[in-house]
Length: 105
Image (tube, rainbow, N blue to C red; front, side):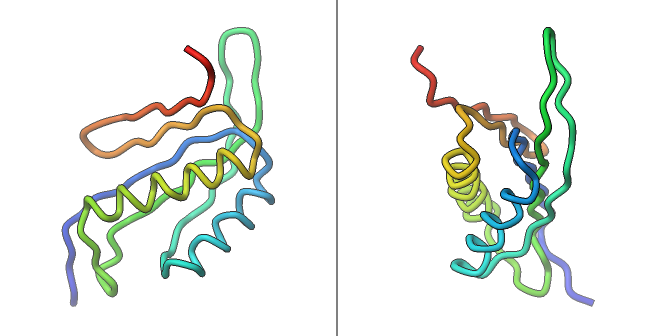
C-alpha cells in the first residue's frame, strides 16, 4: 500500500464536455497527469448552462507536492477557459475557493 498527502482539487467551468475532455487529454499528456471530467449543469439566477467539473487528486502511485498540484490545476483551468471560450472559472481546494475572471473589472 502506498499513501500520499490528500489534496483534492476541483475546477468548475462552463462549456462543452467533449471539448473539455480533449483539452484535458492534451494537457495531461503534456505534463503527465490524470484527471476526471464530470459533465454538470450550472443553475444560477436568471439562467443555466452546461459545463464540467475537472477533478485532480494526489495519486499515491505518482505523488506530487500539493502546491505543485494546485499550480497544475491553475494551468489546466486557464487552458480550459481559453479553449472553451469562457470568461471565468473556479478552483476549489479543501481549504479555499478561488474565482478567476478575465472580464474587465
